[in-house]
Amino acid sequence: LLPGAEARYQFAKEEAGISEKPYFIANFKSRCKEKDKENVALYFFIVNKEPTLDKNEIEHGKFVSIDSIKDELKKHTFIPETEIIYKLLIENKDKILINIHAFL
Image (cartoon, rainbow, N blue to C red):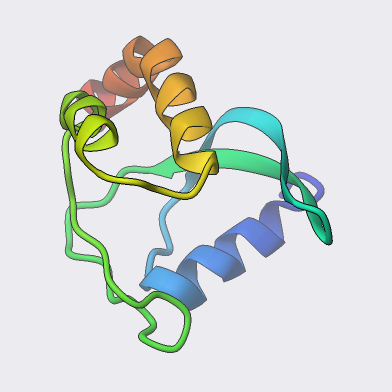
């Protein structure tokens, strides 16, 4: 495994029950809170089962299409990182779809 890959696998397994390979999208800096500055790596996973969310770590969530996120951003207030992640998903949509089609 590449450096840090073991941590990604462990985190995905603990948080969502996902043990499949992570696909890298991009790095970005989260500077939304004065004391909470992080360097973030964004990955996606291709799975053919419902994730098992750790209720101690993830309060709630739902699966949505990348395209529907744009409408949700207009209607609701999200943490600032949501807009960054949305932009990165749109920029990498073709890469994501190619990997999904290869998986199928």
